[in-house]
Image (tube, rainbow, N blue to C red):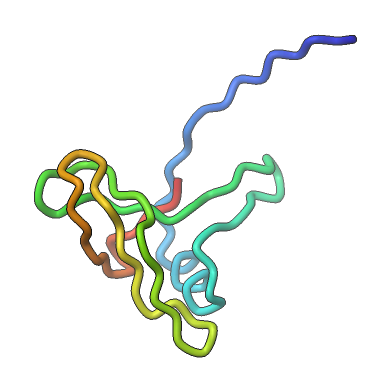
Length: 88
């Protein structure tokens, strides 16, 4: 048995075109075909700058209309516009 150590580096993508594409397709994550890394939507809390993770998704006709995030620092839920969303 071969023991391979894989080192992963967290990558952050700020890509409005990709974010809009995902939302229009009703998706909140995508896989990088080259690395296999799965990117998921995230946002920065407007109150304290903490990391916001997906909390709730509002869909209509299979299109994501609104994404709510929960701040990991203050615990408050907040909405983010597509231009304020990044992928990590």
